[in-house]
Image (cartoon, rainbow, N blue to C red):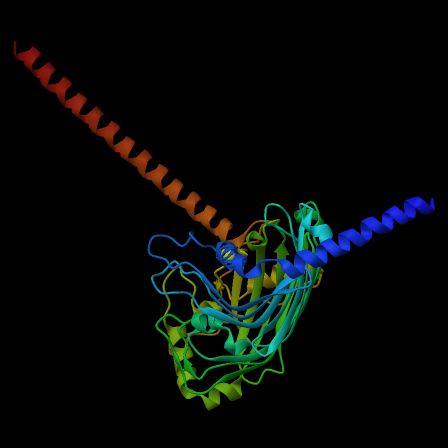
Length: 417
C-alpha cells in the first residue's frame, strides 16, 4: 500500500515538473503566426466574398500565463463583405487559458479575461468539436459603449453608456428543449448623438443627444425557451418596451426571436426639438400602400409599435402595420389577462380621421405575416381562376357562334342547289 502511494506521488511530481518545464520553455514567439492565423479564421477569414475585406488580428506583446497565453495591445479589425474594412476592437490586455481536463476532451473550455474599453470582461465558455457553444458564464463590468467601433459604424452617430452583464447559460444535449439559464444586461446612462443618425434611411441630423436612461434586458431561459423583456428606466427623452420569446438553437446565431415592442418620444423632448417633431409629423404623412409606416404603427396613446421576428443573425425589425393590436391580443392570450380595447389609430396630421377597420380574428399559432401572405396568395389565385373561367367561356361562345354561322351558310348553299 505504501509502495503504491509512493509511486503515485512520483508520477504526480513528474507530471507537475513536466507541465512547469513545458510552460517555461514553450516557444511562444514562434507560435505567434499560428495564433494570429487561427484567430483570423475564427473571425471569418476567407469568407468575405470577392469584394470583401478579411479580418485582421494584431498582437503587441505575447507571453505565457499559467496554462494560458496573455496578449497585450491587441487590435481586431472585423471582416466586411464590402470593399471598406470592418470596425476595429482594441483590447488593452487579454488572457486565454484552458484546463488540463479540457485539453484531452472533445469539449473545450476556455477562460478569458480581458481589459476592454475602460471595463473588464470575464468569461468561461465551453464549445464542442463543431464549435457550438455548450455552456457560457460571462460577466461584463463597466465597458464603455461609445468606444465600440461596430456600434458607432452601425448608428453613424456617437453613442454613450456603460455596459454591465451577467450571462449564465447551459445549452444541454438538445438546446431546443434543454437550454436553461439567465441573461441580464444593463446599459447605464445610454444616449445617442449629437451627429448624423445614419441608421435612419437618408440620415437624420441630431443637434443634441437623446437621453435614454438605463436600458435593461432580461431573459430567463427554461426548456429551450427564453422570455425576453426590455425597457428604458429613467428615460428623459424616449420611452420604450420590448417583450417576446427566444427559441434556442445549437448554433446560437440561428436562435429565433419573436418579439414586439414600442417606443414613444416624450412630450418634453419634442417641445425642445421642434425639428424632430416636424420630421415625425412628416413621416406620419408619408405612407406607401401595403408597407409599414409611422402612421400605421402609432396607437391612440402616441406609441409607435414595432416587431422583430426571425433568426438573430439576420434579424431586421420593422414597424407594425396595425398599431400593435395583434401583439396586444397575443400577449393577452398568453397571460390570460383581458385584451386592451382597440383604440382608433390617431389621424395623420392634416387628414380627416378614418374609422378603424374591423380586424380578422387571429389564428392560434399562425404567424401574422405568413397568414397575411397566404390570404393574399389565395385571393390572387381565386382571381386568376375566375379570369381563366371567363376566358374559356368567351372562347366557347365564340366557337359556337362561328360554328352556327358556318352551318347557316352551308344550309343556304344547299337550298340554292
